[in-house]
Image 1 (cartoon, chains in turn blue, cyan):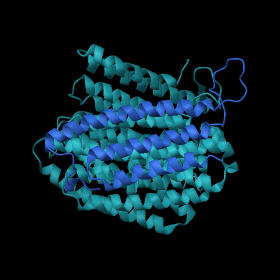
Image 2 (cartoon, each protein chain N blue to C red):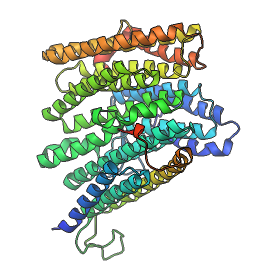
Image 3 (cartoon, rainbow over the protein chains, first blue to last red):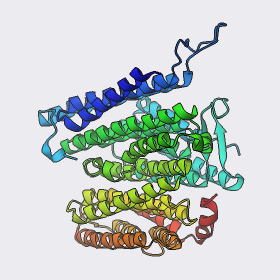
Image 4 (cartoon, rainbow over the protein chains, first blue to last red):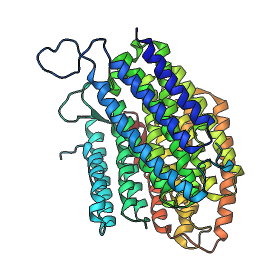
Length: 110
Length: 441
């Protein structure tokens, strides 16, 4: 049973979701989104993990190894997350130069 | 003729990254790539129509391990629509090479979403389209566009996290990412897990597909963006993602999930149309009206398991909305239809959207009402007719306001061409006979 991992996943995603919904500062919102992404990546890794499994590299003593597919997915997801964060920070710089603040104004409500 | 659907994704993706190297000729190059893609999509449709659904494996790994593309008639037609509207819409661009680059990325992603047969691949294409769209919305450098893009980005990123959680749950249960493999073995999944993953995936895709509680970004992003980019958003990402939801419904295919989609569609339709009715700003009105139409498409898809009218209905609403709404967005950079071609595009577009025969929008609503009548769910029929009436009222106001305007949009001729496609698709009598047979295959 790997419950600590799943609890961590749930905690990361919930903290991130709370941050997105409750924070006013856009920088904090994007930090919260990064937290959620980390949570999902951990979830994927946990799904593919086998206790005492080795890295899925074929080298002769190839008995018990972790599922390689989720690792490939996480690699992709990390790259996507990175690009989204980079674009977000660029937009935040522009937002700051237009408005002088990183808080979103009231007109921007959902 | 050897036709690989993967070319339709790979060519624009590759040429997007060549764009910075050929700054001078970027517009001609991007336009020829889009034309080539449209030609390929026609060949693809011809092939799928003659030989039946097509499965192409990539990089030599056979499914269910390898990534593969699955193309049926509906997805080939949608790929064609996305590419031809992208080509026409590109004629209106006056931006620099960065626009061409992002635009090609967006088109490649949207085409990928409709052609892919792998759920994680679908996620990646979603992200490609979404990141390109965020940047496109923000490419107009004023405050409104920046705010719209940030809002779109926050919701879009949260949506993509949800989608990935849904994929992770499916993978943990079935150890498979292949859509057909998942569809075949879905019943062996624990029902609780099935609902969990379905809800996560629906929430994730629903952000892009403008479904009701998740569409807060729609009016701001559409209003803030340049008019040709709002037009791109309304035929590209949103159409591709509503099709992704249709595929999701087919995979899970439980009567309860269809029911959920039906209710979501009804709420989205009503909220969108009523909000559009109260709007003063033209672009916001068009954006809310888009939400309403997406609801209508979702209603059509949610009847897929019951009636054979559902898919033609969804298809014709998609055609009508993709062409007419995109054209109206193109015209929305100026208040007024000054010249003949914008008068024609505006009038025909509005008529198609409110469902006047013999335009594509009429056939969409006609098939939808036939399907609803078959099922004898009269409440839904009443809601559809009610929303059509509201639509007619606010579009009449819109036409009245714009017909008086003396200025005319610079985009009027591409807009007229777009609307003409909707008219041709509505009038071609072959298509009526085809619609039933082709789209249900």
